[in-house]
Length: 121
Image (cartoon, rainbow, N blue to C red; front, side, top):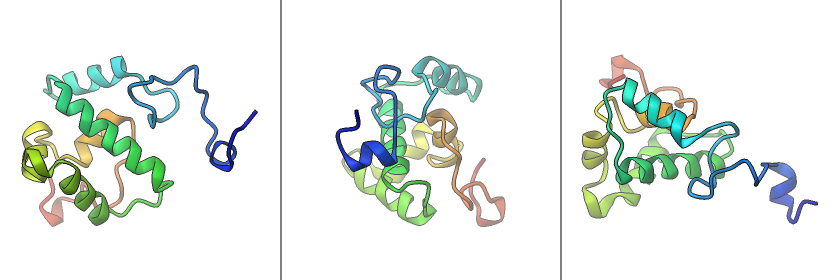
């Protein structure tokens, strides 16, 4: 039985989700994400997984109404102590939003991979 209105609006099977990634999209696994990261030339460390959790949480809280600028600012704030977006570009050279979303199992928001704006893919 659903315990809250949020559970009704955003059902998620709690037994199938990874407790370390509570906001992961349905069907996402850390193992599959590690394979994607490896294919993209990344060797994930804990900071990569922290960024993945941050992206998944942001997407869940914003219910697919994701604004690239707001997401960028949220990541900057969350990782400020480590160097913010500059640090995240070291972790995800393909772009913390675009490449990070691929690893996180999320659809990158419109505008995050547009080369005409100087973003990386």
